[in-house]
Image (tube, rainbow, N blue to C red; front, side, top):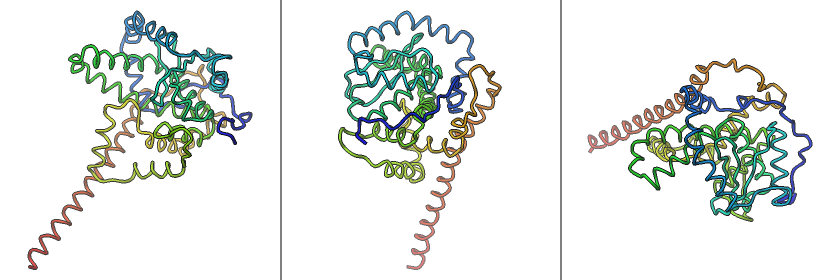
Length: 332
């Protein structure tokens, strides 16, 4: 199959009226629900940033990017329409291609979200993988992430480039938003899988976003093995470095995203959704907020237990080494 050809998509299931709850990571939902429960928080954000942020951002892309349509990047436009049909997004968002060397994409905006694909991404990913990225961004829109993501980007821009001293005051907010956003990425990797309905395409796109180059073949099995090695290998110091390295990042590491996606598939949730067993948008969310918090905490607790286990093992190794040295010193 040529790199630009698409796999047969006629067998994809249209997920009519699917609620984003179906794919959202519990830590993502718990954090976002906490923000939404602050009285007037959403309204205040829309009023403040709607006066300045969205209009400026939209005008910037209209002036310095190519808007996708039936005549501009028609194949991208076709993939956008297909993803919106499968995930049942009635109002198709605008999509722009921006001349940017970083292989990335994003959904931005406050009241009227739109998608931006960096031009370098179209060079590195094939068309199916590009569609997976589009499905990921559509997931952000359907989950209502875009308002908070835009807030995060504007805060980072203001504190870093305009008012660096203010960064100290808003650092806790930034770190909290970054932690939420990393979890929201895991949610929308699941949305990408539901949009494509092919795990290999989604994981391949993550692999190439991590380190792909134009025309260079990569081996997905090798990257999956690398993902397993990262999650399972290393000692205590490696675990500390993993946490520290992720603190300032907007996205989880690609190897972690692949592992999380595989875990979600193995849980059976993906299979149930594909069989039609998913929550609809018109159904009341009967899942208590406390349940999301419990699941999120369980995930963090499991991670903490892994670190504690590694600490325990490291201490045992240290005791063994000290004991060996002590015995040898006595023998001499």
